Length: 219
Ligand code: CDP
Image (cartoon, rainbow, N blue to C red; front, side, top):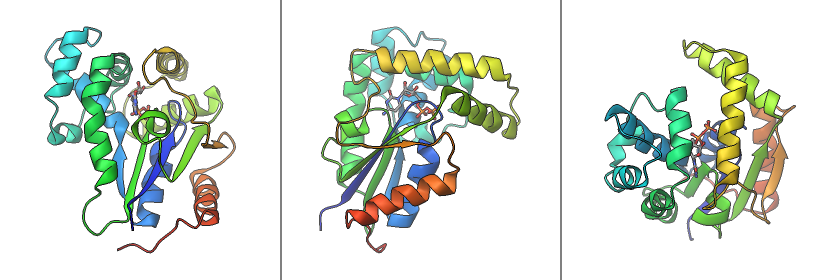
């Protein structure tokens, strides 16, 4: 049977990563956090003292990216988040990263049933033929509160008002760019997670997958 592909898109801190990881485990699929790819490109540029808004610098960093770069421990820093959304607006960067994402989706590791990818443009650009697409949303306040809590739990300093401002800036950049902007695919299932916890979002998504007859046993 062809590998199944699940797309999970949405704005900053809408709960994509948590949902996508759990779906992958439950469905016996591989998981790819596509945000980590843009973050890795940004982190490499920042460490080298480069400008993430310089198209040539960013495109070169994207072309040179290696899988090991996705394991860097600085990917979730807030300055990397902002720089990631800057490199992500550069068309040559997106073009350089597209094949890697599509290959992952089409050829999940042996024995797995498929792939779950989360990001901004999975349902619209990377995998427009995905078997099921989720578009997660939540109020800006709910998302900022989640990210603030996440940062504090990781032992980082965090000020709620600053998190809210950064999140708004990044959402505006991600939605406003000309290439592969953040938007829901027409056939995406929309989930507003403002008042849902991770378990509830997972239950709703799994029910949708079961309704379509897509759930399979791992292996
Ligand atoms: O986890 P969070 O929602 O904060 O962000 P992320 O998914 O790690 O993505 C970081 C940044 O990468 C986003 O702000 C986007 O600018 C960019 N990105 C993208 O453009 N396309 C994707 N498929 C995934 C991420």
